[in-house]
Amino acid sequence: MAMSSAKENILKKIRQALINPVPVPFPLSEGTDSVFKPAKQEAEVEFAENFTKLQGRFVFCVNETELAQQLDALAKSRNWQKVYCQEPELRSMLQQHGYDQLNAPDVHTCDAAITGCEWLVARTGSILMSSAQPSGRITSVYGQVHICIAYTDQLLYDIKEALQQVKDKYEQLPSLVTLATGPSRTADIEKTLVVGVHGPKEVFCFLVERS
Image (cartoon, rainbow, N blue to C red; front, side):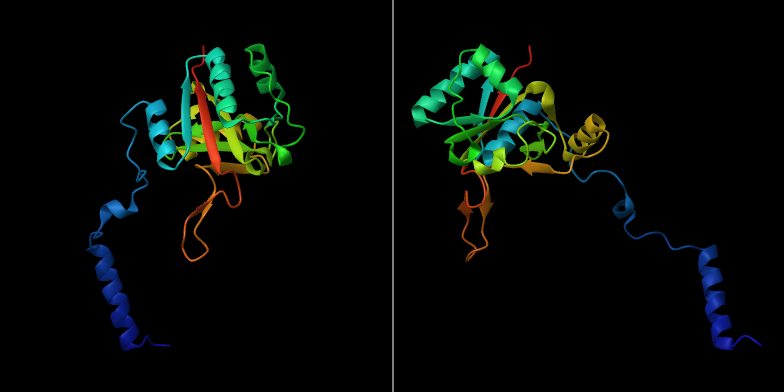
């Protein structure tokens, strides 16, 4: 069957266009480079600035002894009677350095809950945690106050790096990976921002220099 003149004309135009392709109007739009600029300052400073912008409370400690002292001072100033920590290594470390007020029987009735983390993400000021941690899924969510204890060698710049490190650590991603960026907040009701509705009202990060 003879090809119609209209179809032949279209194919002719396509062949001609392939011989002389039109340049892409926005060549940079097809790039794979990150849209985020690299860090311009130390990761500790980057994290602290971004974390506090979102109402997180940041404390830097030069060692674990200072950590225990700072934590004790905070608990006394807030009159916390029940502090909960489910992670054996953190409990042992704090008790070894003089803080032994980890007496809350469960996370549901505590004044504050202490956890570690997988990584800190400097660019967003986020705490990355997973269900593979000894604190499990709920400790960082159920307490009125969440206290994260992290070390300087747990600081990474971006989320992509942190997720890859978690995957490498466990060979695959745990069943739950969560990013906590400041206290919980919502603006679902009349677009009014409310803090602490479905999670902790306050989030502290104690960053300890790794000796």
